[in-house]
Each structure stands twice: as structure tokens, then as C-alpha cells.
Length: 78
Image (tube, helix red, strand yellow):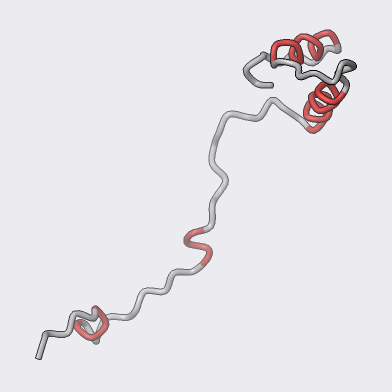
């Protein structure tokens, strides 16, 4: 007969571990604050959809158009 490898059977006096959702929930972490807002997202979407020739705009064009409106973003954040 093979030895029992079940951890509960090997240590009958130990209590079984209970993992609660509060143990594994993601907690807020300290991060760099976000610079974008919903208004910036809407402005970017409007720039993408407002191309009069129905051609694609690159990120630099979108960032340039937004900076004319007073929203300073870099081409890499678009």
C-alpha cells in the first residue's frame, strides 16, 4: 500500500487553509497619476473620426491638432 500523500491526511491536526476573496483582491497601488481624462479621450476620438478625406491620421498629426486646441499631448501618448 502506497503512503498517503494528501496533506490533510498527513497532518490531521492542522486546519485547512481558507483563502478569502479579501486576500486576493487587487488593492490600489501607488502609481504615477494619470494625465488623461475623459475629455481628452473624447477629443482624440473626435480627431480620428473627423478626417475629411477618410484617410488615416498618424499620431503626430492627432497630437498636433490637439495641441492647437490647448490639449498638450505627445505623439507617443496618442
